[in-house]
Length: 184
Image (cartoon, rainbow, N blue to C red; front, side, top):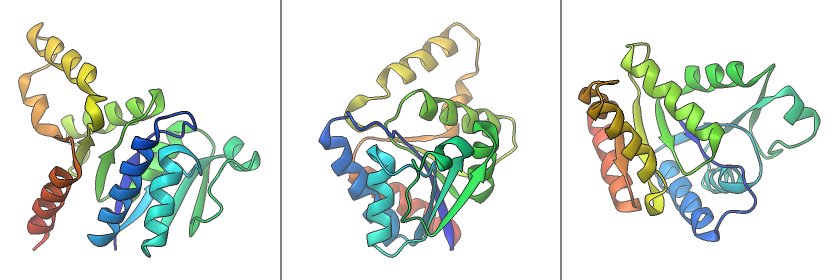
């Protein structure tokens, strides 16, 4: 059993195209034999990917902070709910379970999670693959800022080797095929 840790939005207000893509990503992850560990919410991209993977027989582990759990903002269809005291503990729990990180479009929480896994990989604390699903160029400005930091010598250009950036479902499938080959 391998877990894909997916970081993504819980916004109810986003374009339905993102929801559709998250559902398709969930189907693909399930086809590749992944189970899901994620932030545990039931709405937005979090809800879409968890429902899709559940429908496709993957195990779903939601990792919630206490407040979210007690306010019943978690996905009750999860196979397992892990309750944490705060966001730092929540991230640590998800990272411990992860065999792969996949970052879908999201807000400030998603960016925080993305930066943390990149930082930890840079420091050698983790080896898992990080895939950034850059749907509709949502992360263009993020990558522009990375390039600016490289240009100004705040970070080294080898930072680019710490993740893979894909922009469509076919590219994601190609990346998952590469991951599968590494495991053989």
